Amino acid sequence: MDLRKLHIFTTVARCASFSQAAEQLHMAQPAVSIAVRKLEEELGLHLLDRSGRRVQTTSEGLELLQRAEFILAEVAELQHSLGERRDLLRGELSVSCPSMLATYFLPQLLGDFLAEHPGLSANVIQRGTTDIRQQLLRGEMEIGVISGDADISDNALHCVPLLEQPILLCMHSEHPWAQRREIQVAELQDSPMVVYESGYFIRDQLDRLCDAASVQPEYRMQSNFLPLLVSMVRQGIGTTIGLAILAEQEPGIVGVPLAGDAHLRMALAKRRGATISRVNQAFLDWLGGQLRSGPN
Image (cartoon, rainbow, N blue to C red; front, side, top):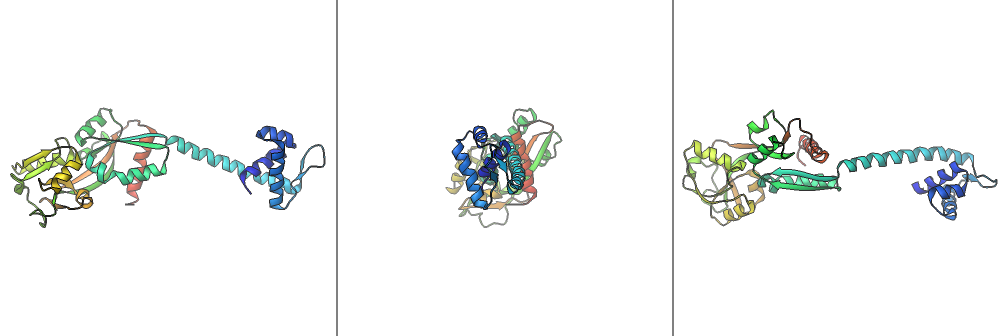
């Protein structure tokens, strides 16, 4: 039994006429007759009395009509409800994010979200967290990843915490420091490094640590292009500063904690009280639910 045959049968029963039902259904009358006959054969019941001028339902047909109308109404309501959800999540998700999280953390989350909502596309914009926070506060973007305890507790922003990880000095696995348990910030004096440009969360943390220890590393290269930094580290040009997710996912690179147990917190934020697109708000809500339920 399929829904199409039920729909044709209920239309014939309500119209008490094959020809009128065919007109309503935009079908040829023989096709309507065949569909009803196949339904009767499938059930082993006579559903319609065709002997008079008007088609009449038998007692079995009347019982089926009542149940079929209920089933078809439920199906229509379900289709409407699902259609509203699909319509809600059509369009483009737009999120600004620093490249380290965009590379190592967001892909799984974005992939899961987009897989649930095939009507969506995503636009991930690479920016430093300082720039992201300022643009959020000015209303120039809707959602973005920010860093730091002060930002996350800022009453001007509504935040969904993403992760908290130790800040590591990342190096080639053959580097002399690769087997160390920790590295003192003072040891970075004149040490060759390849680092992000100023304005990126991880570079700002490095600058604060070095300023506090009156240390000046030898910056061999500065770039916001993460694959280039990783390649330079692999070639032994210098170390870099990074989160544990970088060392965990990049073969041949080792991460060693800096002394002082330095950590960094990251969150996805929007300006508090701001009305944002339904797609971006849906992602923010979905992400909060995913992280509350634990890792996938």
